Amino acid sequence: MSPSQPRDRGIPEATVARLPLYLRALHGMAERGVATVSSEDLAVAAGVNSAKLRKDLSHLGSYGTRGVGYDVEYLVYQISRELGLTQDWAVAIVGVGNLGRALANYGGFVSRGFRVAALVDADPEVVGDTIAGLNVEHIDELEAVIKRRGVSIVVLATPAEAAQEVCDRVIAVGVTSILNFAPVVLSVPDSVDVRKVDLSIELQILAFHEQRKAGGPLMAVDSQ
Amino acid sequence: MSPSQPRDRGIPEATVARLPLYLRALHGMAERGVATVSSEDLAVAAGVNSAKLRKDLSHLGSYGTRGVGYDVEYLVYQISRELGLTQDWAVAIVGVGNLGRALANYGGFVSRGFRVAALVDADPEVVGDTIAGLNVEHIDELEAVIKRRGVSIVVLATPAEAAQEVCDRVIAVGVTSILNFAPVVLSVPDSVDVRKVDLSIELQILAFHEQRKAGGPLMAVDSQ
DNA sequence: ATCCCTTTGTGAACCGATGCACAAAGTCGG
DNA sequence: CCGACTTTGTGCATCGGTTCACAAAGGGAT
Image 1 (cartoon, protein in one colour):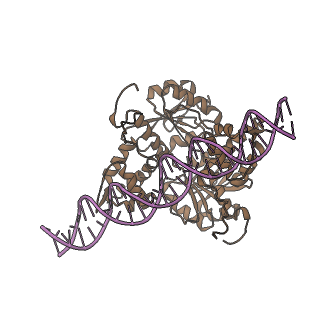
Image 2 (image 1 turned 30 degrees about the vertical axis):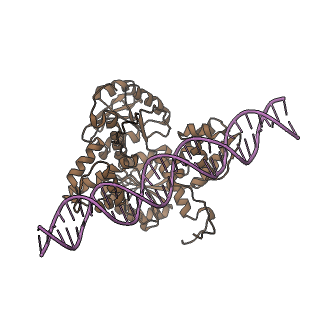
Image 3 (image 1 turned 45 degrees about the vertical axis):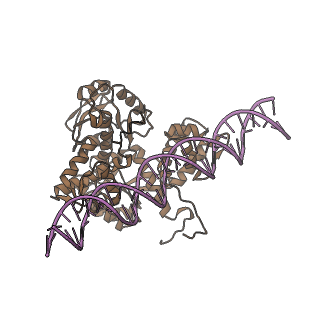
């Protein structure tokens, strides 16, 4: 705000998106008993350029030792703290179709920092079922469940038509973080974060490049 | 390669990533009987800036009419063609756990241009099962299935440990496009395209921003 | 204690993407 | 047929992110 106080705790978005990658690589190293790691090695493990890695980490602070590298355990802790994974996040999954079910059972989901705290669906056929150890609750209970369980992150795995309404309702009870799997553009206030995952978009991007490789606009049907 | 031949059919990567978004919005409009659309309206529907949309479309050619806008049907066709969706892509899903199953049944997957042509798994328990109308084949048959069905895009929904080996094997039989859901960094030749979707990374990014909103490093527990 | 070797952290050039703002192009009413 | 209006397509300034390259910092050997 005030120019006299730079207050540069702002970490670039691109960096934030890579921190989980580093964290995963570091966890693997910690399990294998690695004590310290150089930016070069960690960069390879995470699949990025080492200069980029160092610049990313430098946004968190000076946690490396020149001539040695980074202490694995310590770096795991620092990144976890920065990402907010030292606390426990209650996640609700709305829409318990094939995808919602898969997400509820997805191991990597539950692992560090996150806990699936509620499953909600509109279909009376599945309400009351137990999935991944959780009772599926009715969509009418949405607001009550979110408040009762202290849910702060909502995963939308509903059909496209239902997504915006559910989105509006959870925002109305204070949720400000949404992970959207429904193939729609959600309209939300600026204060709400929405991340979207669209499986078919990823496939389409692959198809584009595949087409290019296969001869592109010239359609040169040839060995290479 | 040769600098003498610029060959500028190169569409920026950021543009390619947005084309599927435009396509989805356009399909919706076509269904609602909309004949033409302005860049402004389409931009709103796709959730982007209208100048960006126009610049993106300009990379495909001059398909708009000044003073009028874009013909919906025509633009759908042009974008589809550019993305390579006018042809039929055979997709194999390797790993038929919760996620693989969800993907096999996922409607938006099958829809336009893509066809799930094979399901493959290592677990004898599921091999032979019929999922989404397809017989699950054994991982030993991987190479044979890919060749027989003409699979050109492989979706990896295996456990993390198995992903790299499956990846190597499908590349060995000529696959150059992979959509990876396993939480590992795959190592592949430059000629192969890998796109990754990591559900837990998305959650971690949300957690980061959520933590910031909740008071950030100062932990100012306050209304605003 | 000193020197050499390794590795970090970062200044600076570079690159691609974004968004403004406007001229060119086309439509439509009179 | 003309003039007002709409909307595209794009030149240009800007911005965020990437990469290079190197000085500063620390460890370990002698």
